[in-house]
Image (cartoon, rainbow, N blue to C red; front, side, top):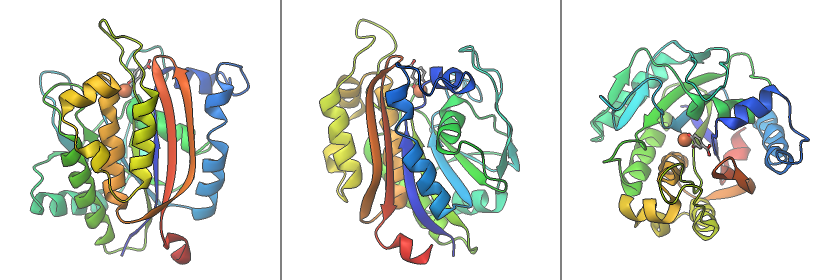
Length: 285
Ligand code: DHB
Ligand code: FE
């Protein structure tokens, strides 16, 4: 069966794409942010995942406000990025693994999650900036399953629902007949608000609670919150933390923290990074 060997989460601010293309790693503004990633590069090099299952939110590239699914799973052989504005470029297409996608879709539907299935799906900065951050050079053969979670247009799914959805995705991955090593990724967050009177809002205390809750095997400190609470505590776009919760649900059980970084701000966002490993995962790697 496929195995989940790690969990990763990071912010996905578009300005990061420009900083990567201009190689601003040592620029004083960017250095404290990019300094977080080399330990993750080393860890991924060591554990060598075959597949990345990525919970992220599309921001208007593949879905728009006229029709915005709550949970949408990619089941394509290939996923392309495209010009989405923000002044950022595009990246090489990502290779899919349709058999695993369909297994996740069928298993989670059977578990009671009513999904949108996408046999074509464009992936935006919410998906690919984290992939560029985690792998300086994408390993040949690395396959992906993109899973979109609506954090853009209310009503969005609750934190508790996203954790439960992630748990169902994790069970699906672990019942997939194959020998793939899977890393699960959640993107977005941490606290940020891009518009309105509170534009620029950041809440370090809440972000710290998120880190502690995500490494714990009890996430109720976060999943207790309604979406209204989350908007108040994390900002309108800080609700993207629900992608991190889906990742944590998929990894499940007890974990050890491999690495974390936190830096305020990148653009308007409190930039966070977390890498975790299920207890005992290393034994089988
Ligand atoms: C910013 C953050 C986001 O999560 C995003 O999707 C777009 C922009 C920002 O901080 O600029
Ligand atoms: Fe975002």
